[in-house]
Image (cartoon, rainbow over all chains, first blue to last red; front, side, top):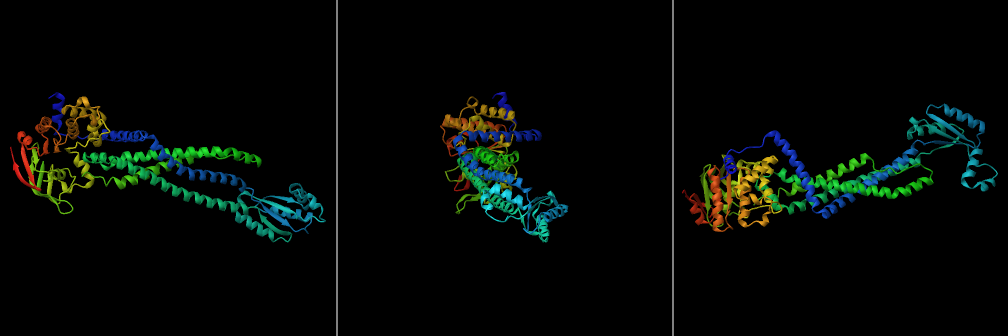
Amino acid sequence: MSRLESHILHETVQRQKPGLSSGIKTYFLRHAQVFFYSLGQLWRTPFAMLMTAAVIGIALALPTGLHVLLKNAQALSGGWDGVAKLSVFLKTSVSDGQAKQLRNRISQLPQVAEVDYISRAQALAEFKRQSGFGDALAALDDNPLPAVLVITPKLQHTDAASIQALADQLKQDKAVEFTQLDRQWLQRLYGIMDIVGRGVIILGAALALAVILVVGNTIRLAIQNRREEIVVVKLIGGTNAFIRRPFLYTGFWYGLFGGIIALVLVELALWLINGPVENLAGLYASGFALHKLDAGTITTLLTLSISLGLGGSWLAVGRHLREIEPR
Amino acid sequence: MITFIQASKRYPGGHDALLNVSFELQQGEMAFLTGHSGAGKSTLLKLIALIERTSRGQVLVNGENTSKVKRRRIPYFRRNIGIIFQDHQLLFDRTVYDNVALPLVIAGYPGSEIGRRVRAALDKVGLLNKEKSYPITLSGGEQQRVGIARAVVNKPSLLLADEPTGNLDPELSWEIMQTFEQFRQVGVTVLVASHDLDLINRMGHRILRLKNGQLVGDTSA
């Protein structure tokens, strides 16, 4: 018997447990090892891994892409929010002088920033220029267009209620025919975008569930493939946490790779539509540029996809590890 | 070390695999468990390793009543027991070294300690030169010795072996038994289930004989 052997044999009865501080260090080391071991296991079958990750990526790319488009629509329409103006149409019987007096009165109001006066003649000239019906108008005896006071409220009074109150107040004046809020169509647009936003959330929730099921099913198959190994590990004293760990990390990797694929797909889609959007913005002489994925969205997407991967594997592991016991 | 007090195991369906078995095994004692297949040898070992629970009676291992061990504690309970199987239960996608290291990895030993202990255990069973091989490339006897190395690497105070020589020729079987004998000499309690009467008679240790789930013989050497 060699010296080493006898040393080991004599130690047999007085067994030692690993110390606490080295135990903690070892614990984190083991976690890191399993972390990369599970990645290595996945890379051994790259095709199968990429298939699953791609399914996750596509499922996540859809709501993410819609979310980005919606944010763009909001950014675009947000620029129109400040231009909410109140048009006050005057009766045709009101003279130029009376209209100017009214303008001065209105501009004294505390909630009003600016009042533009468009006289009947100016309105006609503008209409001729912009509509292309100038000749038809020339055939009329009378100018059919009313004079307009275009009121720009102060910034803190641009909300719908304040403007409505202002409109109601001005309607009392006998010179005023009617008022029109230039904002209604914008409110309708916001309403539609709210619905679309809700739809994106619902779609996202459904697809998140799909991701959990995809990961869960993949992990379930992995557990079944390694059934014998799990039995052996349980027989020699492996805790459930020890057995669970590689599967949870596998779920983590699926989530991460799925999230990255989703990012790439969304970026690709944005890049593809960027050209036409720039064209269209050019036609409107607008400086609008497509908002790309920002850091916040990227972080949220990756956090979410990793959580879904972990969640799916957690469910599968919780359900199936208990069933596997040595017989 | 092991105490059976009127222990019985009834499987669902009413089959009594063990019936009122009582015996005691001292620390550092070696004993053989024999009987025909179906006599209850495996069931008895399973009760000790908590793979099965007793239906009636008590089984005490190292002073601990196994029926009081909570499900969550079973892994820690098993780390004190080295188990050797007839079919080795090795992991074929890992090297001999990794197979033997598994109990230490599970118990959270630091890397340097693992290397030292694995090599010592492989040296003990004469397989130090095979540490990088895969189990599939080894002979049946060598695979069984890897199984033994894995069972003892954690230095358990109790070794259980279920038909460890079932598939081996007499000479290899004798060598395996001599390995167990060496562990007994340093204070490990060893319980071996075997139906190879020639072999266990030659070993000259205590023999527990089971028949239809009952202990029908307890002969000390």
